Length: 104
Image 1 (cartoon, rainbow, N blue to C red):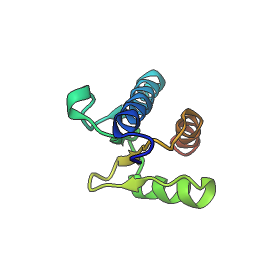
Image 2 (cartoon, one colour):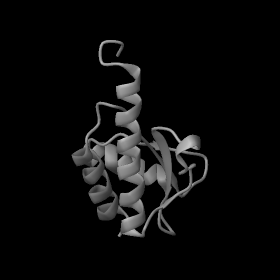
Image 3 (tube, rainbow, N blue to C red):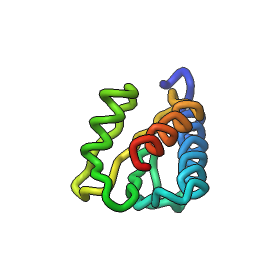
C-alpha cells in the first residue's frame, strides 16, 4: 500500500463510493443510509433494501449464489457494502444486478 501511495488509494476508494452511491440513487430502489457527504463517508456504505427484504437473507443469497461478500447489519432491512481500492466498477455493477435479482 505504501508503494501505491495512500493518497492514490484514498482517491480510488472515493471514486468507487461516488459511483456506488450514484448507482444506488439511479436505481431508485435502494437508499444509502450511511453518510453520503464526502467529508463524512468512507468505503463502507449501508444500503436500505426495498420493503420486505431482510439484509441477512440477501447477504446469504449473494454469498452462496453469486460469490459476492457483503455484511448484514443490526437494522433488518439494511446491508453493508465495503469497497476498497482493489474493487472495480464491474464488481459494483454485479452487486447491484444481483441485488435486483433477489430484491425484485
